[in-house]
Length: 193
Image (cartoon, rainbow, N blue to C red; front, side):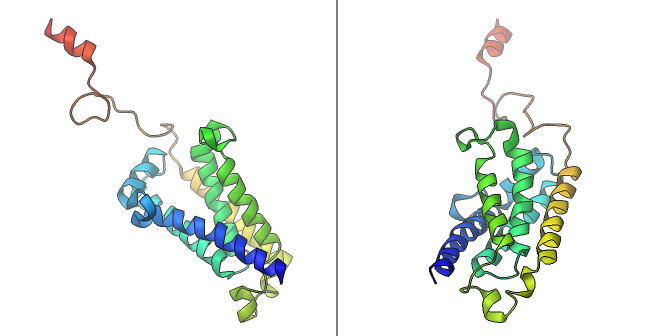
């Protein structure tokens, strides 16, 4: 009973946080960027067109998180979560080291470790898999390996499609009213001299 309650609590925390993270991008909920800014971010990371990749990332996170919260689908939700975290760690966080204070891979690493634990064990008695009777069949080692392999293959496919000609968001090449960069006062002063 305690194990099952602990698994439920862990599922609610990990799955709920991941689903909310996806909703930030998909809908702008919880202070998130919303679909337009998420698309711009994805485009800047080399996932082009951003309008295609942002919804894929958002809905993968929401689906993975929801499956984990519900305890449904065996290793499918955890594999989807790991897939997204591999892409995030590689494209956003790896260049910054490990710790989250520097925007490193720490958070995707922890999410992935938790998802791997769910994939390798089960969701417990307080899960939809237990209620509908799929808890045993979906926990066959071949099913787990296949789900994890599919998740990693998906991550590698997305990363391989990434345009890495520009690392990170594009840098504006002009200054002034429509640029996010401030006007260069030295250029303005020398031009008027």
